[in-house]
Length: 207
Image (tube, rainbow, N blue to C red; front, side, top):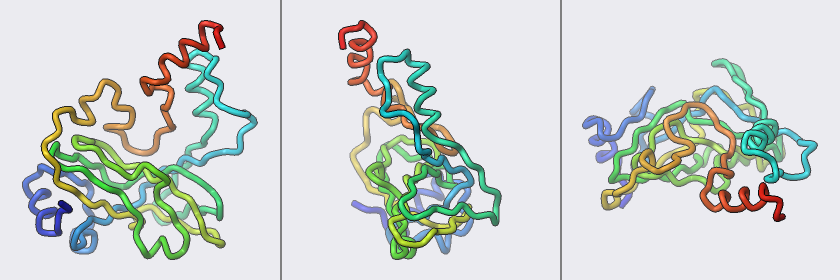
């Protein structure tokens, strides 16, 4: 069941659900979602000389090549980040979230920005119960004109859904890769358990 505005407010007042800073509750809380704002950090995906991610390398080298794949840009308040048509960047919410174990979230774009071609996530719009941290935007300009994006603008909305209480929360997983952070973070696909055997296989010279 999706939480209504009344239930969202009750969760916030009880501090079971934490969203901070909530700059304007009257404007941000809708009938069944809460608007989320764009933060100040962008991770721009660069054109790379690499043909692919090389998993034959030691883990530290794999991390380095992933970091080289992107560049972090910080934007001051009232300055804009220009997202050109076809560009893909990672960004984060201005807000920091603490989601209780009986709620999940779904991050979507706002219609206002969708109408000019802004896509706020590619696939990763789901928020696990127990998640703590800023949410990541996967921004893509699908339109024909460059889009000026300013820190603090409401480009997304988060709906909250009741579930049965989860036994294992996001922050209690063995390797919660993206929890308890602010700003953006590069992909850590190499930490997924299925890659352990792939990397070991490559490093043993059996590829």
